Image (cartoon, rainbow, N blue to C red; front, side, top):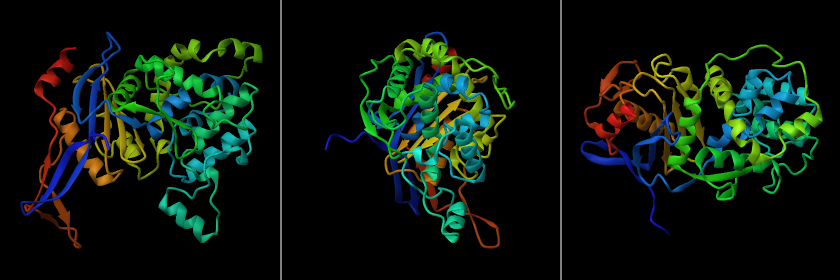
Length: 388
């Protein structure tokens, strides 16, 4: 086994004895508007170690054919487009939007190639089991993303039968887009098959943080068009082919839509995840007040969280944050790590005293339990970000 890329992120001690240590990687970059390259504020662990991007890639998967989908299915509402970036919990709002997309696109549920699943939402899963509802591809948390691929291929009059295969030309659009974002060759990315069966790409933690820095800092306002129809006029097939003739040729053009995707995430956080999901709560301001800390956020399988901090007085170019927990996703660890990181960045105040709540709701101080964070954002890095 090669050398592990992880470093200890934080340790919990009970009565001065280490009880839990969580390992991982943290990357924080500032989106430098003058160069587009960004500035590294924190690199903890091996930030160049290749991580499978998992669901953190969903905004760029949609971005790769966003214009095609919008052009050809004008009845889609902003909420429908937001669902195409979601790792949804399959709550009722998600089921309603999925049904809408299938109807608008004249698709069939059996065209989906993601695995048959029960809902991520515990309440919906219990309800489905009680009613003997069978697992379905529609209930998979990636079904909205899969529908976006089906819509794009249908708009281009191409076969949808093999859309999950790596050799499908549709994936060249994404590779060209990632290459344009990161300054890499389109054929340089390590590829695997994601849990939903679509291709997934390996990126370094710093590259993932950079992607979310770009997304959070993209020019444009945060007003979303709420009308039913974005456009009533559908382009002809000839016009479509001319506009989308080559993946590489149109990668730069696709980047102009980053601000729209950011607005969709900010406007519909409940669609992106679910009512109790951490990324949804972050964007709703239930972890840090939304008006004080406007963010976009996306969690990913096996311990991934990406956060884009929108430009603000402290960081005029915005920030991209990537946290990878080596042991996989556990909400209490991710909350503790992100809270401390935001505190060190000067963006969030964390209560210093840990408490537990007894059965009668009284708060009891637990002085024998202490938490130590091993990473540190230096003053030099903060000063560089502010002066860039």
